[in-house]
Length: 261
Length: 259
Image (cartoon, rainbow over all chains, first blue to last red; front, side, top):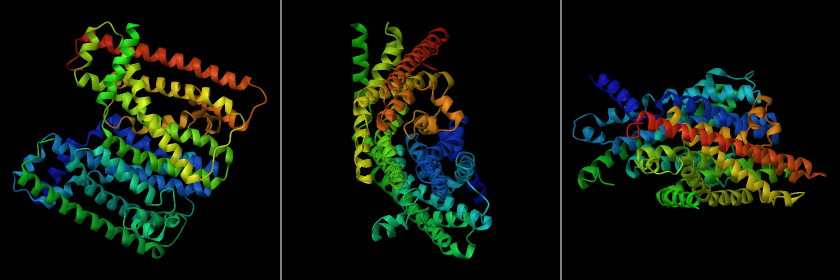
């Protein structure tokens, strides 16, 4: 029964609250967005510097494109859940809150993987990304964990989106933090030590390192620490996000302000 | 005179209904970060000509992204907000109203372009150098005009093809690349260059590149300007036809309220 509820809620929140599911938007965000960003950054990198750097940028942008679709998808679902009044039905029901919270991210996860694949395809076509040395097992493991931790981060951002009712603003700020501090383009080593440590607490930072290393053939043992840290980051964000979700419900019920602007 | 009054009224209406300062600041965070990342890439290259080019291009990317997004949705928002009704019962062409709205968004996002410019300056720590700075002002004006008329097309397009949320997320970066805001379009792969040559801003950006590198003759610059003006007129004509198509569809099918 719990599993059935989980499946129903996953489908309902995804189908009803994720407006980019329309085919035009889906193609635009999943297929074209990653390729367009590869064109912007990697192509500039190849022209301005050299092909090796373009490869680094391509992997960074591939990671960022996962962040964009996941944070965009999940934050808009939270805002719409409040704007459309559907979250009230959850709050008056005895439904398991943890199941509901986890169900909100499940169907967004594959979108991130699709974005990553299209970004790599784009990089292969545009900047001749070389797959010759890839340690596929480590590479795939790193991608799966990064997508999961980005999903957890998006869940936390979703709480800000439901509170502020402005998912576009939350998406802009949330993704700006990731883009500048996770090493997608600018290596985190150029920042002061304390900023670098802060950056390592964000999703994608450790995982992106593992993705880049395994792409050039590093064995799994060399990056397992980074992957583990990324997985712990994922757990941390899910925990904080869930606490935020419970707190929002409590405050909304106490103040009775759910429908107010 | 009445047409000018209509454009000014549309400009003021759009200005008043544009999102507030909190939203603007949230978007600025994305603009600053994107500008910093692009500036970082060019700073590492040490290529002075490219750096100067991106001093112009990066702020234009910031303006383009939000102008195309906001203009693209503005006609659709008029329809859903039921304010298009008043336009349809008046004799003012939809295109005039859209011109006013486009001007609003260009004016609204130019400060973001300036912040983007300052970000590039802070990241690179170098000043731009142009061989012939006289080319810059008119070229820049043509880029802005080209960017505005290109954005204008998307407003009726969203209604005609039934664009949905997220529609512009790929159009924004693709448009930036094809307009030559990142690199001169002759550096793009051939297939993309051919498409880019159909956009007015790409020709104006080419004249800026000529100004950076220096040119012995003014003919290449004048040719690029001419192409930019010509294409702007063509794009404006297409926008006019598309706006008329929207108006006709609404009048003939009587679907204003349920489009």
